[in-house]
Image 1 (cartoon, one colour):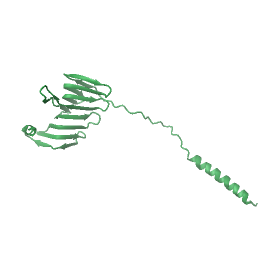
Image 2: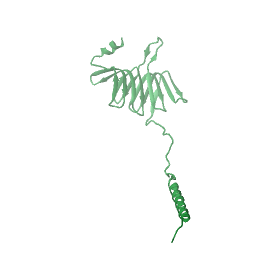
Image 3: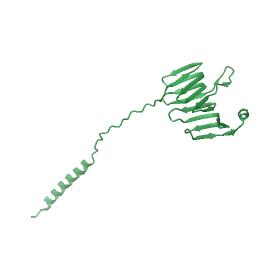
Image 4: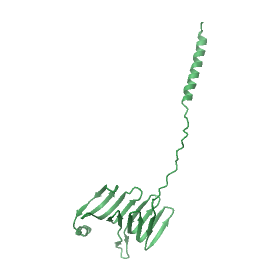
Length: 180
């Protein structure tokens, strides 16, 4: 049986068209039947936040911030925070606390932060309830029999702290000397 060139070309073209169609169809993307939820998870606290203040309690729904002013107190799980002013952002779970000025312009009501039996006395603090990380400025704390003073502290977790300009002593007088 003899096949002429015309038939060869026709068979070859048919074969190329058939195979190219096959390879093109093989490239089609098959839709995945698993649907991924793209909604953002709402960050929620695991326990009730108790709060009070002598001056006022202000709720800013637009910025999602509660402000406590004058002898402000906030309690959450094992955390106690007292300060002149406390601001809590319920969207980011970040609380900030600092001193306020009295009628003479003096800074008063420094924060007192207590957690798991440890107490820190800073000028100001910023703490994330979710990550448990903190930034602490000009703090004083007691570790065993030692007094620890620091210009700035970054708390990564319960056992990792980065401290700038730390002073460690058994003497209480260092705080008075470092202020002047």
